[in-house]
Image (cartoon, rainbow, N blue to C red; front, side, top):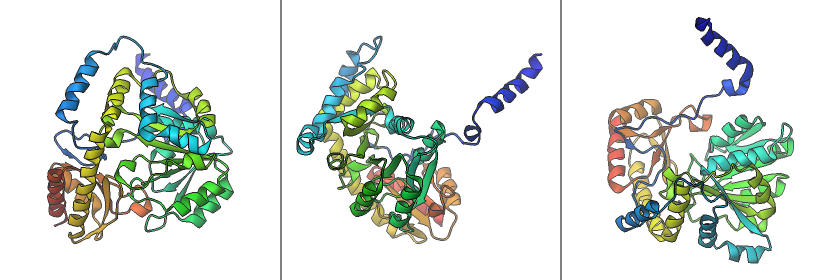
Amino acid sequence: MSNSLPLQSAALVETLVRPEIRAMHSYYVPDSSGLLKMDAMENPNLWPGELQQEWFETLKGLDVNRYPDPSCAELKAGIRELLKLDALQEQSGFDLDILLGNGSDEIIQILAMALSTPERGVLAVEPSFVMYKMISAFVGVPYTGVDLNADFSINLAATLSAIQEHDPALIFLAAPNNPTGNVFSEEDLQAIIDAANGLVVLDEAYMAFTDSDLLSYVSRYPNVVVMRTFSKVGLAGLRLGFMVGSSNWLKEFEKLRLPYNINVLTQASASLAIKHYDKLAAQCELLKTARSELLASLADIDGLEVFPSEANFVLVRCSNGGARSVFEAMKAQGVLIKCLDGGHPLLAECLRLTVGTVQQNEEMIAALKKALA
């Protein structure tokens, strides 16, 4: 009897797990042990020593045996002050609120669950953040991807046509866009918002590295919310994303937020970080300078097409092919980057390089040159 259990289990899986889930691949995160990790757009800098000490003292006083504050009142108040939401609210007449998620991924899932149906699904431009498509599959709703132009700008005619044809309940637009690094024109964004009958989500995960700031859109358009994260400014390990929008939207989305989704440690750590946000912002400014230097160094390398970036990463294309070989050769040298070849036709022979410290960038450039030689 026991010998048949694996067969029975496999049969049950095939019967009960949705076929579109069985056909999917899990989101793959490679092992980076012993490697210079330049694949995940993390801030490479630790908190300054005095802030670390204050953080340790804060953590010592936490009651981890108790559930966290389910409303995250202190953390929300800090974000509200950081973003000057009260002033924005006065200007707009909208009551604005904040939704917190265990990373932006959870917020994307909440939105897809709340709004999408088998008749009206999700639309996004491509290539962009892969979780828009993956989460649509998770919750069983249709997904429409619209290809960007060759220069990674929005193909407005195609996008507007897809909106008219599919009438999506939810549209995701990332600014800056991942993995391309560019910011879409505001004229295109406004045209899409005007054409949409559904909710438009402006995903500003990388806004700390650009002069673009679309937060005011939540006060100008009733069908817009803005999503951001603390991951890229140095808190990736805390997994904290948030969304700002009209309380009319957010009170409905709160119904799908799991209780206690933001743990005690994250709430306390992020609240402290917000009080010292100037230190995180200063680190981001250093990374912007490092990005400029990295772009200049990449431009001097033969065999690379380098795309402009307003994020904390740079997209390059191996002009003579062989991106996968370059990726493997760099990994063999101890440098882990992201190979995007095969992810989308527009990303053929492309690699994505995270912006690190000056020393890290130099090491990455040296490995890249050797891999291309």
